[in-house]
Image 1 (tube, rainbow, N blue to C red):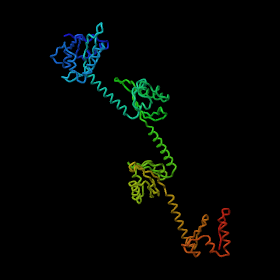
Image 2 (cartoon, helix red, strand yellow):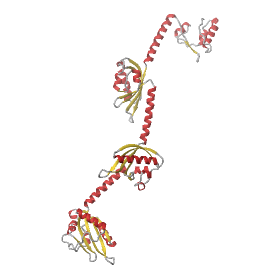
Image 3 (cartoon, rainbow, N blue to C red):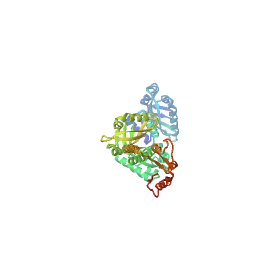
Length: 478
C-alpha cells in the first residue's frame, strides 16, 4: 500500500497544523490520490475512522466510495470542495462528518493538489484530523456567545466592555443610542474619540482607569450628555475585566438611566424641606403616622407643648396618652375614617402631658391612600386648646357674674352697631321700655320713647360719644 508522508506537498501553515495534530494524536489517517490514473489510496486508520467496507481495497478506491461514508448532509459540500481544489490546484481544507458505523464524528481534511510542469493536476495527498472535540467546544463557545449577545442586547440601559486602553470592545443598543453611532463606528475607539463633551470623556476615562488600576468594583452616579443635547443621570456599576490568570485586561460596566428618579428625589427633598419649615413655624404638634407598621413621627412641638422629649412613637403610645374618658370615642372616630373612604378627621380630647396633667387639644388629620384606595399614611396637627379653654371658662364665669349683678341691680344693657345702624337690646332692657322680648328695635324706637324735653340732649350726648374725633363719655339722664 502506498501512502504519502503527512508533510509532503503542504504549505508552511498546513505543515505546522499537521505537526500540532500529530503531537496531539489528532490525525486519524492519511490519503493520496493519483489524479492521473484516478486511484485513491487511504491507510487503515482512515478507513476504520470513516467506517469503510473492509472488503474494499485500500489502494484502488474511488472518491465516490469514500464520500459515501460521509454524512448525507455534508456529501454535496465535500464533493464540491474537492472539485474546487482540483480545479484551482494548491491548498485544500474542508470539514465534514463521517463514520456512520460508530456514530458520525467531525473531521477536517487538509491536503494540497500538486501539478506537473504543464500545469496539470497530478497528485492530491493529505491527512484527516479528528476535530469532534474542537467542534463541540466551538459549538459551546458559539452558544455562549449567542447567549451573551442576547443578554447584552436585552439588558436595560447601557452595557459595554473596554480594553485596558479604554477602547470599546462591545456595546449594546443602549450604548449605541448614547454614543449616537453604529457599533462598527465606535468599536475599538475610546470615549475621548467618541464623546463631544471633552470634560465628560475625561471624567469617564479617569474613573475607568481608577477601577482598572485598583481592581475593585465601584457603583457611582454619572451625568452624561446625549448627541441631541439632552442631559441625563446614570447609575453605573463598573468592574475590572480579568483574563484567565486574573490579570486586569479591561473593564465591564452597566449603566441605568436614573434621571426621573433623581428628579423625583429632588422634588421629595424640596417637599420635605417645606414640610420641616412648616412644622417649625407652627405651634401645632405635627404628626406623621405610617399605618402599615404604626410608626409615628412628631415635630419639636410635642416637647415644647406637652413635654414629651421624643420624635418617634408608635400609634398605641398616642392612644395611651388620651384621657381614659375620651379614648374610646377618639379611637372609634379616627378608625371610621381610615377604614372607610373618607380622608379628613378631627376631634377634641384631653392629652396627657409628660408631667401627668392633661391638655385640651383639637386634633385634625388627613388620610393618604394608595392606588387601590388603601390607607398608607395619615398626617395631622394637634392644637393645644388649654389656654383658649381656660379663657372661655373665665369669660363664661365673668358673664354669669355680670348677669347676676345686672338682675340684682335692676339694670339694662344695650349695644349699638354704628356701621349698620342697629340697636341690640336684651329682653330685660326691652322690658324697661315696655317692649316685648321678640320685637326688633332700632335707634328710632329708642328716641321715640324719650320725653320731648330730653330728646335733643340725649341725641347730642350720643353723637358726641359716637364721633371718633371727640369720643366723649356717654353719660346722660332722660
